[in-house]
Length: 265
Image 1 (cartoon, rainbow, N blue to C red):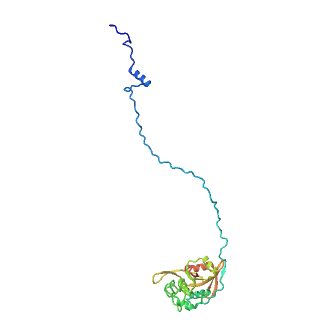
Image 2 (cartoon, rainbow, N blue to C red):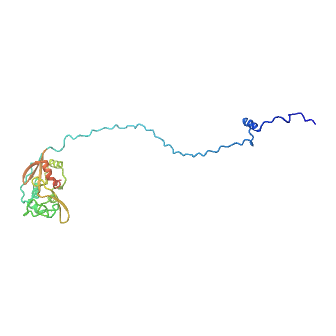
Image 3 (cartoon, rainbow, N blue to C red):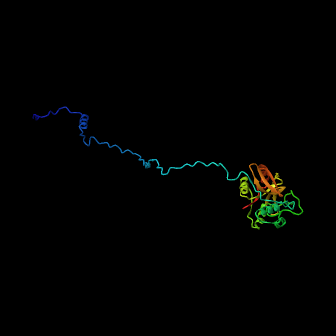
């Protein structure tokens, strides 16, 4: 039997690879031929950044009050006078060789209107081996120029304490400066001052009393009354006489016992 007419059975056949390529180019890929390859999700390490702080813009401050610049004051003139002399004070020669403290104290008291006999004042002072607490030595028999426990004298605290018993505002002080002296004298107040001899120097000595208290003493301790000053000198009264010495000489002698004094408080 003759075969039916149609496409010849032996027509040329395209290779399978070409056929697949045609479908790929035309977007028609059978599911079983072109299996889509899904790209793996990239593993990205997320960084959580810190929040960016808000920045406050810097604005020019509003000046509400215009500052007033005061120049540094310059000291043109001190309130303390350049010279002072207390002329209404008088003194007397001390009764006992070792009694300069009592002698000066009663002259100072008389200047402020209080009359005290030197011997009364002297024997009212307490006795001690420590001059900070009382009189050291026998005022009627002992000589001058020694240090405790030998005959010596007395320092400012017992003198001031006894003067206060006469209602005088006496204060024992240490460490006064030259300006303090000038200020006190300018107010009309003489000063009882502890120096060495006739304004000389001696080495201070550390003394330990019977109660083991330490006190600074010096041989030839002496007491005078300061009554005036000028630009180069200090004037003082001793045994009723007046003397002027250069300021540096006075400061050296006064400094041995620590600028000790009794002042009118």
